[in-house]
Image (cartoon, rainbow, N blue to C red):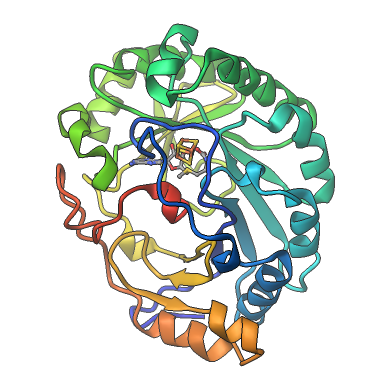
Length: 326
Ligand code: SAM
Ligand code: SF4
């Protein structure tokens, strides 16, 4: 599948739920969001049917995301079914890690190859301020990371949304970890959406993040671990892990975009931001062919996003990334 700008699209991110067990300050409002009504959520059968259509059109890799994907009942079975779809050879998971202690092994067996885990702080005393949930969840996340390593998820990527005055002073500690562990720590610029405009002052550019990393010692650019994403990676010489930056605001990478998104209610979104989406749910429920709708969506995939710091205009009025899977 190619779009009108010649970009090859072979990667589908699937948001399997809009719900979450955390309330990260940069993502979801503390009171939650109006959840998608149950009857509007795609069932497992419907997701499998839609992904089958994507696979027939050339999608080979999936990422399961949300909201928090592990809170969807029956996720392990769904993963097993997705992995069995002809043409799909890579299924990754983005998670906050809270439920990994009990689920990691089953997810691995079901066919998840790789996980990205969000960890915005190494300091237990900061967790409640950032995730707005009790600290016992933090302990579960740390255990979840340990279990993920133990069951052999490789590479293990750790996502850190960096916010000035909240966790930016931990850039050195998070970077230093990569000298000891084979973690791929990715520092992410805060993307402005409706629910986090109060964080405008907390924005830090990736250039500033990298400057702070470089003050710790020499780094070299490296290709980075297997994945599909837009991160640029560096490494301290000889370190087992790497450091990445994800730069949606300061260094646009849309020309390398290889992805589309399926939302939990069956909308296909060809860009994380903006308002363009095409409904697949009605077609999958009436048994109409889905491929023409996917191709229609792709034909309208925008060239790039127009995010603006401190404004949700460029995000098309999106309230939270949890609505579209990040
Ligand atoms: N709940 C899972 C998690 O936290 O990893 C998956 C969904 S979450 C929306 C996917 C990724 O988006 C996470 O790494 C999260 O930190 C990131 N994210 C959420 N809101 C963001 C924002 N406004 N700016 C930058 N990254 C954001
Ligand atoms: Fe939940 Fe992930 Fe959003 Fe945090 S970033 S509130 S864990 S969906």
